[in-house]
Image (tube, rainbow, N blue to C red; front, side):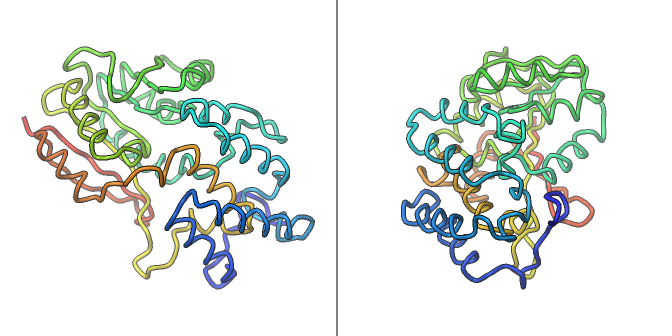
Amino acid sequence: MESESSFLPEMADISQEYLELWDKHNQTPVSPETWDAVIELAKKEEGNPTAEKGIYGNVPLNSLLELADKVRLEIDPVKRYELLTEKTPTGELWFDQLDGLRSALSLQAISDKIGLRHWQSGLDLGTGNGSLTHNLETNVDRLVGIDRVAVFARLAQERKVGAEQYATADALNLPFADGSFEFAASLGLLGSFDREQANQYVKELTRVLKPQGSYFEAFLNPPADGSLHSEQRRRLANAKGILADLIVDEVSGRGQKESLSFRELTTIFRDNGFVYSMAMNEDRSAGVLEFKQSQ
């Protein structure tokens, strides 16, 4: 059996059925028809060598299906996230197991970018399990992580290895004084907002950042040839990977609101006095946007 950490299918190895389901999923992330098709395929694969491959090879299908049912029935967005603090059969938290929630490439890219200098103060927005604050602890004198899900703030605090601080707070209504931080950063939080929320988010960033402060956001960079990113291909080892991605999108609310284009997001930042630059990692698989206040 391929180990979950090493198996990475090439495009030629991914079945057309997977690719069609993946495409449907991305066109309409929470479509009931896509859910049904993916679940049916995953059940057909159960017990076959295919089901044992990839990052979800050691996760029993019945456990994924149980989580999917809970997530789909829960209407409260905060309580949906709280479901991910339950443990998998392997003893991990679902938040850590579900690969689509936190990209290791994005985490490393943003950690490397921010880690190029030493900072007096920083804010990690949507901290989740505290992975970004842990990576940056030696580069920042005062580092605060917030999450609107109280249990994540508590778990991150319990896992801390340095002097990080964690708090339960809404990124659209930050409980900090004006000019509190030299930088703020997130791993994908910006992409979860609609236009109104994005405007409020940037206004809050403008308020809590010091003059000429920076906001960092990481992203995955797709291959120039139009093929799928390696992080996406990892989840296409079997139908369980597609099912896990459906769960991630249901939890995050993707598909329930109109996402903003890169141009729309940069315009919101520009209108609030920011200029942006972009930096890529060595193999150009991930990058970091830095929005810096111009005054």
